Length: 272
Image 1 (cartoon, one colour):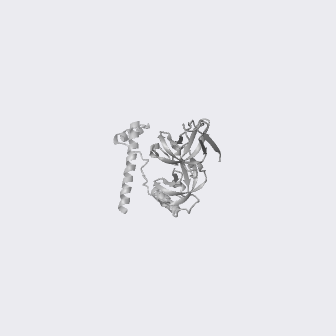
Image 2 (cartoon, one colour):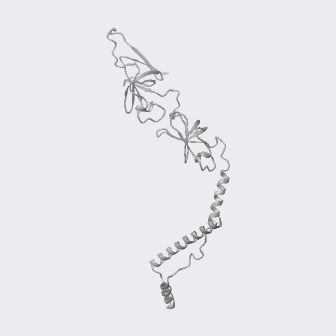
Image 3 (cartoon, helix red, strand yellow):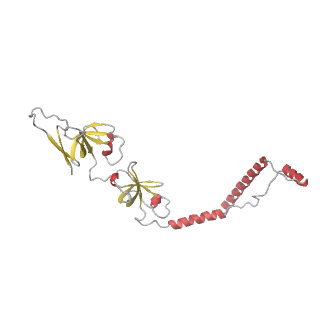
């Protein structure tokens, strides 16, 4: 472990007046060292902690806990005694960076894609489940990653507080987003293939049961249009229906289709 020695001179700390001018108070600090201090000031970006070295150390908001923090005051307050660890020492800038996250704690920065970790199901959503893997950010187990077969609902595969192993498939440290999968790590849910086959068969039966309109392409004319057409045919000419007539024909065709569907549904209901 790299060790740095910071004296009162480095930290701009004056020696006590009752001591000789040559006396120096030497404070030895090293990266990773555990220290108990007192919170002196709370800011939007972190907290300054007095660790007795003549210069307060800064615990950045991202170093207060492994989870996301939106308000520093939700974690610490002025005058509070806290345990911190030395994260960095900058002699040139006379700065001490601290962390309240134990060096033994696993964080999102320690994770790697493809790694298998243990977790606990913390909550369920319609599209999957969130897994607490102990890094302060819950990982998402999407329903499509719950098995090779079709999974309709996440509760068909996992349940709240269930312990399980998951594989990290995507990792975004900046956005603190983790996607995991359990494919190949446990037995597949049973009955999914049969359910899918039944769904396909039902859709096929529904398509076969549709009503076929025999008069779908039959041209329907009003009495006036019919008389006009016959007159034209008698004179050896061909009739070209106006656009308004064609639009009316399309509306009539849609109306007949809808009526046929209503009749079919009524018949189906009576059979049941």
